[in-house]
Length: 243
Ligand code: SF4
Image (cartoon, rainbow, N blue to C red):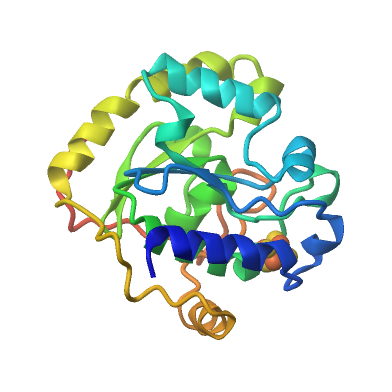
């Protein structure tokens, strides 16, 4: 299957998915949107009110701020792919629960496989915890690291900066360094992703097997910004240290 076919299939699956209780608060699933040939994947938390209405990621105030941040470093959202760790809106914008993150990870894992990005920018503590264990976003934001052959760049969620104005300049500083990190990743990672992704079986049975065998992430960070002990996110210290 091609990357486009896989992403289309995932979008169709999440539109009717009832594997966790978030489907009760779903008007439209939000599988993600953007360039399918990109080297850069942004992962946020979950759809909010406007995203649930439109079925698109980051279309509310947070999305406007994300656009502003991208523009500030010479980027445009049409050149990246943007998705979330859960594809359906948590009611009242509450945090996604551990079991919801674990269940929905099957879709995100397949999106990552299909797009095969060199750089993943995590927006907020839930997507950070998917890749980096036992970390506080307040301590590691803007500090990239290699995880399983991809450069993971932890950033605050734009909504955090809308709630706490002092984070706006912090996020702008972090985003200002993004082009340099992308260049470093391009130099470090050999050229990508074949157009045809033969291994990406996205049938429901394959996704079930994948979720059971390789839930890479699963655990949600606790109410503080520290991921839970034992969260299987992992650094890859065997990669060259670029930063
Ligand atoms: S959040 Fe994910 S696992 Fe839960 S119902 Fe929506 S698509 Fe399915």
